[in-house]
Amino acid sequence: MSFVGHIRDLAAARRELETRRLLVVGGAPDADRSAFLDAVAREVADEAGLPVYRFRVADAGERSGEAGRTPGEAADAVVEACRGVFVVHPCVVVVDGVPAGAADAVPTGTADGSLLAGLISAFAESESFLLVGSTDAREGASALPSDGCADGWALLTRAAVHCDRGDPRAAGPLLRRAVEAHQVAGDRRGEAWVVFLYGRMCRLRGRAEDARRLLHIARERFRAVGERPGEAWACGELARLATRSGAPDPDALGEARRLHERAGDRRGAAWAHLWWTVARADEPGFPWREEFTNVQGRFHEVSDRLGTAWTLHHHALTLARTDGTDGVDGTAGTGERRREADRLFEGALALFEEADCPHGRAWTMLEYALRSPAHRFLNGEWAAEIRHVFHGIGDEAGEAWVDLAEAGPSPDGEPPYELACRYPTALLDTLGWTEAGEPLIPRAARDTQPEPRPGFPRPGDRDRPDDSRAHVRLTLLDDVPVPDVPARIALQVVPGPGHPWSTAPLPPLTARATSLGHAEIDPAHGVPADGAEFRFTPHRPGSHRLRFTVEDPATGTVLQQIEAEIDVVPSDPGPHRPTAPAPRPSARRA
Image 1 (cartoon, rainbow, N blue to C red):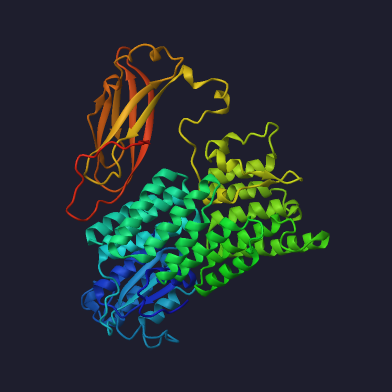
Image 2 (spheres, rainbow, N blue to C red; image 1 turned 135 degrees about the vertical axis):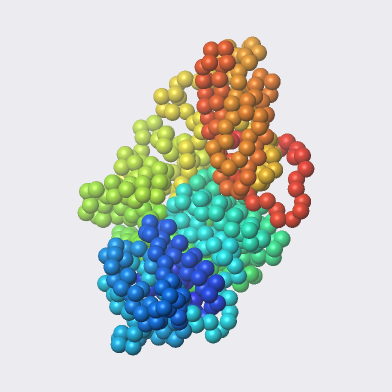
């Protein structure tokens, strides 16, 4: 158990609650304190899958909801309730309105009738989380600017945590709710951070073009509101997009680092320094030992365990792959490098586990197993264990790398389908193999969790050219879809050269459009032969799914059904609305 007074930082409150399972909040007016408690409770309960129970007590018994009771009797009733099912079954319990003075210190006993002491006693052996709010408002300061804004920032924090953990799937719904909260509060700075996190989420999922578009928008919005740390983060994420093609951009990463330093953002500067070092680590003559050590010191200064873990991971990876260019030669030097790399991998694993980052843990387990045969052979199920961790966060690309490590190089030298359909050819071309047949996985592979590319031929289709088939092509004609503004989508049926329709007019096919979310699409039907065009009007930011069904009306046959996902960014809070947009020079395929 732990006592924390006058909490204002939601992230710090959550860390304290998850570590100690007890949080006491005071020094704020009732409305602000209650909003803060609710935000922390929802954040922890949603992620842990626990129910939330709320009690209100105060200096007078009638505020407990039971008129006529004395404060002591009201306190006893709350403690008795908490001694029951809440202690046996894990949950999140919020007790607000604890009398002033009762939360000033943790009492040593219950003889004085202290409600806080009774609650601590009731929860002493419980796995539940307990949040206590004190009515003491001596400082008269507001803990949160408003309920809506508080919710928006709490949701943003949770979405960022999911991205840090390597689970971007869970970030999307949180960001949609965060957008609504920030728009209600009129918080342009919060909206800019939502767009940034959308861009980061797209980068993690391997959607490079969407990420680039959103990060550019976020950078401009950060500039508009004077958010210099945000601008630096956006520049850093844009620079990291280059790693997807296997060609990192150290200069852009160095500029992001300088922007962070000018903004006084030490944590952001540490991350930019790390990715700059990683981008140059394989260059001949680069002093990677000194740089990784410097980065590790930076992360220690800002108490960033996740940054320290990734630093140890890449430092160990560099050590394990070095061939004596670090100045250590001979068999003894090779053995020493391997032992040092093992120590760094083990340190990274411990920190990833502490930080609850399964993405980093899985990659470290994989690289440790590949670089340390003795470690791998100690566990005959090493591949299954690592694959299980990747599977837990839905990282099918990570599972494919484990499959490759188990199978070894293919006889024809071609990458497996599960990797070829997800990663650019340029990145896969940098895949190497050791003399022992172990893969040297590109560093950039762990930066994303790419999904399969639509239409990528299956292995059985490789000998059947596409020229005998017809394809449906969707094109977003307008840039940057925003809520309540129509965006045009063109649908084409494109026959291959060997298809009968390539030399004859298209038949009068029907394309039926359906929105699978909070959006309208008009008209409901179109004719591809006449140039089918639909107007897509979303009603909220976030990711929207559309379904298009191409039918032959003469026979009533469904020829093809496809689904597309379109990202909608928050609209500019100013009065300006886009006029009729011009077609894009190079349209995006949905």
